[in-house]
Length: 119
Image 1 (cartoon, one colour):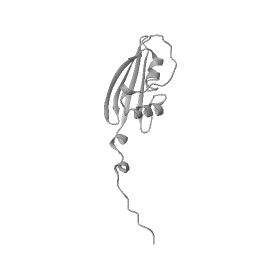
Image 2 (tube, rainbow, N blue to C red; image 1 turned 30 degrees about the vertical axis):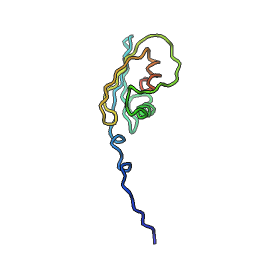
Image 3 (cartoon, rainbow, N blue to C red; image 1 turned 60 degrees about the horizontal axis):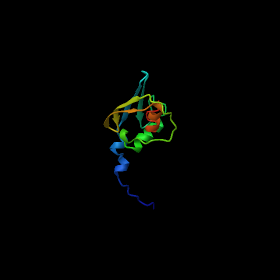
Image 4 (cartoon, helix red, strand yellow; image 1 turned 180 degrees about the horizontal axis):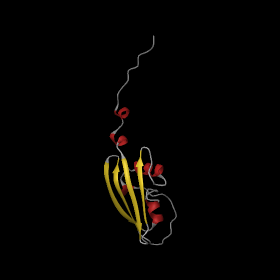
C-alpha cells in the first residue's frame, strides 16, 4: 500500500503578485554633449535592448525596484565633470516608475547604479 501524501496550497505555490507582475521599463541617458542613449528593459525573463538585462533585473530586484536605492559597484571613474541625466519610466512588478537623477558623468552613472544605467 502506498502512502497518501496530502498537498498543501501555499501562497508561494500560487506565485506572489510581485513575482508575476510585469516589469517593462524605458531607460534613457542624456549628456551635455547632446548624446542620448535609450534602452528597454523587461524582467522575468530578462530581455530588451539593455546590454546586460540579466544583471540589471537582478540589481532592481535587490532593491525592490526602488531606483533611489540602487547600490554602487566598485569602479574607477575619472573626475571629469560631464553631467548625464538619466530617467527610468514604465512599470516595475506592476508598480509605476518615474525616476530621474543626474550623475557627474557616464562612468559615475554606471557605477552609481550597479550597471542599470550602464549603456
